[in-house]
Image 1 (cartoon, rainbow, N blue to C red):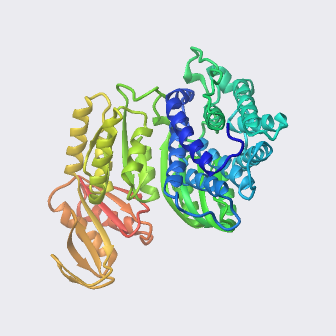
Image 2 (cartoon, one colour):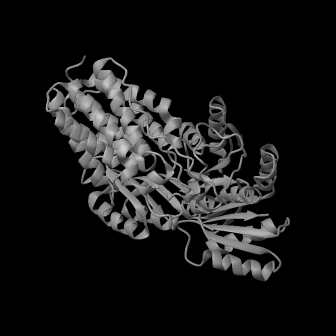
Image 3 (cartoon, helix red, strand yellow):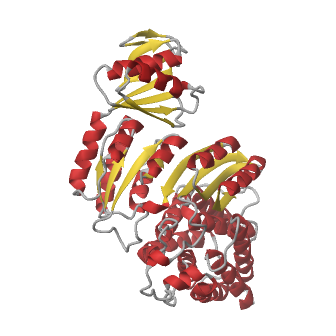
Length: 537
């Protein structure tokens, strides 16, 4: 029995909680039976707490901040890691539960029963504050019940209060179908609330040394999932957008209003380093580009992820036998929106092996094709594919070097073919798409097309400089001419974030005059550094 929650106990709680969540991951994922699911809650919670555990592991030798206790420092590390790695609505809310908990006890000399009750109440308040329109019968209800149970224990005995919180949370979880009709119709309890109960049981186990035996969740019925509305948010919105944001608090206040007008299921939470700090943004929208652009207007968004709900698989206990998915790396809001519209899971540019692996496993599919869209990411994608095989997921990497190649590959994807044949068809389509990039030279250099100076316009075809010019529009038109000289029926143009107005229109008009039988598709790509990306098929 432990009578205080010290730094060592915090680390053990995080580690034990992660093990328990992994053990119950499939069960919690299966509670998401909505036809337009907000990801897989079990998987999202595991990924979120994994990030918290990594933050703790990398900071073993760091001394507490001034005014902070050792246990408070550990809890804040845990909360910060969860915030930076938060996935999905439940992951974001969990990060705020941990933040509220940590803030309440950071300066408390010893965390005993009464301090735990205060911390849980602060955690509940932080969770409710994080959600734009709180809904009862969810994770929010369960954390509030845990706080009430801790308070009603009316004790300073830490294990007694923790057990009271865990029991109250389990009771509240069992009642969630009475509060949320969608849960009652599906015959399940709330998935996020179930995850929190697992974490509270892990805390009890750490404090008492005895394994908790929680009551079984309400059984599923045979009701068809297609008749059920999603747990949070309206079915009116087709995409989940999530990103981290470095921005001042006043800009975030404006961002909240902008995103609230674009969609629902809005959660914007910070790390407490206000007025400036890091924020996690989560929203359901139809206009992905506008949601990301709102983040750019507020500060610096990164780790942008976009998920189209219609393409989420039915939540399985593990990878489905015939389930397929595509994971695509994208830099630029417009490009991400194009890939999401094709049913792909989008990962921000320059991902780590872990981020790609998480995206692959997060699809819930047993067969996944990865499109890296950059020569430097091909090796990372291959490493993620090898790791995924260890988890029973077959991954094939189509080594695309440009987003236009990925668009060509996704256009021929056919789920009725054998997976291997489909990958071959996608690889052939990508290989048949020649690509070019137009940018400005940043320094003097000697290229295969001759010397260039800073500010010159460079047109690269298949990664090699082919043209050097001084006018952006003329150079773009010239490189399209050069590519079409080798044949082609379709030209794809992706305008960069810094592309001047009318660039793609001018190139389109040029092609119409010079190559009247060639079809042109132009889109706002939003990619940095390259005002225009070109694909010719």
